[in-house]
Image 1 (cartoon, rainbow, N blue to C red):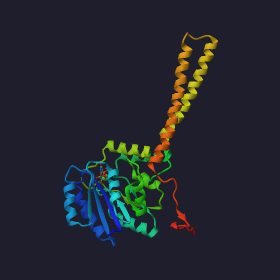
Image 2: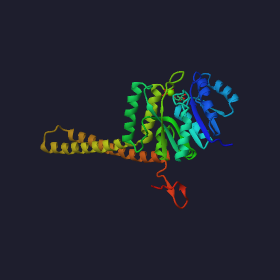
Image 3: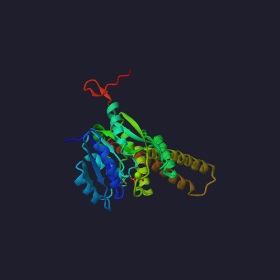
Image 4: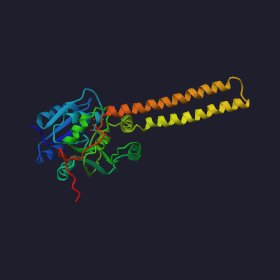
Length: 318
Ligand code: UDP
Ligand code: MG
């Protein structure tokens, strides 16, 4: 039977927090008037996470376990869960109870009452984040907003509800190294937000060392912007203009006779070849940008409503 709600939880070495999570999540889900499944994705943990999950799986029939062979990272683990989740609605939740499970029923209600496809969990209080994380996150989201067409709420993480249509759309994207918090808003489904207070990690320590954060930032930037490639084009054109001016100058200097033998041809060759190369690198960059966009396979437009097929909901401004 297809459950109405799936809760996808990525876990990497979360043996300390797992018992607390089950204890707090289960009564909330059992109390819902909807059928549900929990999809726990063990992201190649090396501690007792796998063994504990096996045990909980035996006593909690709604808990499904997926085990990745090696640590693939937070985003990949969520993607694995999304590919396997069956529900009409899917919520993604961190294992460490920083995203309070009590918010799940509110998200579900918002999605149903307002008929939206996505409900973003937005933190109204980041006091549990370090100063460094707050400042770097704000600066980074602003940078992405400037360099790409997409924008994500800077206080939204990966705690969100998605409709089946949204999850199918995400699953159909072929791209690798995806950063869901930018991909989901880029799909432009009707959405709502629910505010929540982000708690401290309930137990254990962060599984996001600086290196993983840098990887996430680079994936976000390169996944959503070809601006760096375009910068190569402009740099190439600018360099070519400078090189051409230098070329002209060498001939003028030669005509005026204040050059040593061999200087004119040497500088002319270096600047001429340099100019051609810079422009060619820019042209390559333009084609790579096109190939990249094609490979990512994101939709180029979104139909909100079509009277012929009555796809979507008619917009009735009142
Ligand atoms: N996580 C994962 N794979 C990883 C790193 C993290 O599945 O390689 C999970 C982790 O178990 C947790 C969630 O991703 O459920 C968020 O990680 P964490 O709480 O450590 O990040 P932080 O809140 O410190 O940014
Ligand atoms: Mg956390």
